[in-house]
Length: 486
Image (cartoon, rainbow, N blue to C red):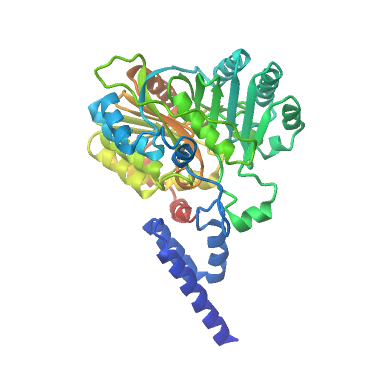
């Protein structure tokens, strides 16, 4: 029996080790973590690796999921611009110092940065909901929504009834939710009422067969996008789910503080492609997506409105595209970078870029919640504080509620805003949607909102972090060490 166990241990370690070493898409720190786990806990590591080791939408079968660019290629193979044409459009549209950032963003999905955008920063979550509902009531052709979390609270009911009224007056309405984040909504009477009223519905990453999901995919691969599209003319981009600020499932951390941008221009059609890709691959009744946008005019031709581009990230897109984009944006910074994120668990690429940016004299500020709804994430976040503060990063913790806004402003000129957190889950596991824009007025408005967050926060100092007890440091570092395995 002893020899049998020794041989079994060796076979398991060798087999799992070779699988880990064979992969080319794994970061070195993650690879080392899995190898150590395989040696110390071979049988347990096999189960964990099968469940969480690989970002797979389907195992042992043909996946129906493709990335956004390939989906466009299937629908309109002769109309898409070449990568070279997209990069030329970047040079024609974007100021020189931001070419690298927008060029990288454009390469993620093949979307072209375009001029011709107008936007309005919503005063708060309540204002955003009022404006969104007003736009839905005025819709004449179609409304498309996709939310990670949709609750049947006041906001959720108001949006659902607005969609039902629109459908009954002849507007084509489609509503999509994530199977885990909105699991209660999917099984609620309100969801059934929407279907009966003529609203088409779909579920991304459904959990109606949880055992099959566990055996064939990863249950923690989620669609975290927040998309609202009205008549292909208006989109709302930002961090807000379809839920009240009170957020009843986690009311102890309320209010949820979000940021939303009402935006018009070419990115609306790009966001429509993201929605169409998710919808038409979900198994719901497909619809015809719009043709791709034409390339922007040369820079010597005037165009009203600012420049922007959509980025859709997720397991189907290029790995680590978000962390690499953030790093490129940080490299472009000359004076100031301000970031807000509710969940801060960066990979080595982003952490190194943050420290390097601060070390070279750029004023870098990070705003996170003082109380996080995830104790795991909070502890892992704290493990990075010492290194960031040593590099000169200013860290503030927001106290009135859970700061859920995901923003990044660079030098008062460029803003990255959307659904993506600066954590490994958003980088590697979630489907996300964001907009990168170049505009001083909008960036300064977002920057003013960030200043309001800072005014309601307390600063974290290096002396405070150094005074943490030894056991807290060990706990924080342990959770940060384990985070790449998940």
